Length: 398
Image (cartoon, rainbow, N blue to C red; front, top):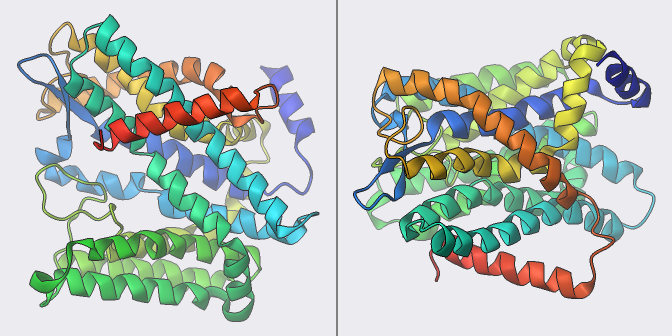
């Protein structure tokens, strides 16, 4: 272990921003932790798995979702890193963008293609009910929407950088205003006449908000004064939306609830992202000093090197335990209604199992993050067809 720590430390460039990498690692780890804690399963009479959430029975646990909803931090750090990378690019903008999008696309294509093969094996080989396959597919696809939105934000990096240079921190204000207008139309006095598709307008500006803040930060246009404004202003807006305007307390969707904050993002998500972004900027120097220690820095490096693997495969790790367990009936904390304190305690005990499964899966799945230099056009086309077929099934289109 000492030798590994030494190798990682010696391989780290002196100019590496450890604090930003640390923030990215924290945001990444919150994604599987949140899905593993708040994602339960019930078992129907035919033995099929169905999604369930402990938040349906334990509404008082909603503040946990405030801590685990860290996508605002992830987009902030993404905008920061993209702005720096774009400024230092050696080639054309097109080449720079192509490289970054390829790194995002390969793991997504890989996980979808693998699941396209797994579905018939599970159904015809192991007798898994179709409803179990649909539940599993929904969970696998669930984190991938984020990659799509992040890819669009990445494509807009040149515009974000230009806006940051001209307007600084205020470049994100129109995005906040756009989401506020849409929320007023869909939740205000004209809600009954608002079209059903209106909420989708919030998808891009809702998540681009933190990315734009990150680009402004990367351009050196977000100082401590701005950070305090984001922290205090975001926290005040968050409290106002909850206490005065009746926004749902949970940052994730709760089965049976008519409104959700995250899909698509509501103004509450942006308020939380603003507060988190301000805190991140303020804590940057302190976090950087902590991560000078090799024992703390090494895990950050490992997580960052496996970022897309964690995002794409963590639900598969949970399903690797839940699907086999469903054949045995209800299993505490894994298969069964998440409506008791006993379920919560049992689920906490399952977390190391999920993490171990993700480590095993990641050992092989990480190959999808590397360039597919040994894969010919025919195999790439086959992977694309398999992935498309899985997407059609997972989205309920076929």
